[in-house]
Length: 255
Image 1 (cartoon, rainbow, N blue to C red):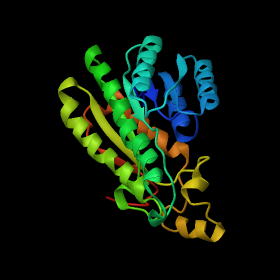
Image 2 (image 1 turned 60 degrees about the vertical axis):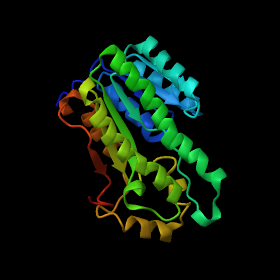
Image 3 (image 1 turned 90 degrees about the vertical axis):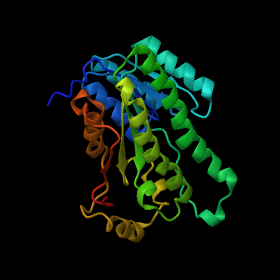
């Protein structure tokens, strides 16, 4: 199926490594122009942009701290100037920390909240305003985790932050529909990226087997399991789909 993404301008946050980087490259493979946002992984974002350009699309790496409102606004303006009006925003930037709640304090909580929650709001606000000003029939796709849907031990703050994507997505869908802007979310479980060990608390082999037993399909996700759903929900082929939270999680949790 042709997803009709050729020539679309896409901004993916947290795209200097891991799943975000692969999402950006998947869009490029469909002929979309891609801005790979990064917070600290500049080398990875530049590498991804170069790979995307070699596929024949326009691409750039754009850095900013999503905790800085002015920096976010400037980054969005840079993407618009270099690629053109943004058609698709993928909110992927987030901070997850595995830690017992009773051993944590506000200094541990606030960075997660400011990146995963407020940072997402900042980026969404800047891009949505631009979409409205440009008259773009846009798509906003937010990545979230199943911890925010079903809860997770040692991920209480992460789960709290992740759960806000549900309210954000449904509210965006209702408020921005009159501007022909859609909003959806993809909820995932554990995916094999460079941060897998961090997300599992550096579990030993026995603990990993126990974690894996919670997945009916008996394996963790791969990036290529996630990207097709992101592409489809972001594309014009899903023009009548908005306000939806779709799980891609190997059966870990079922609505």
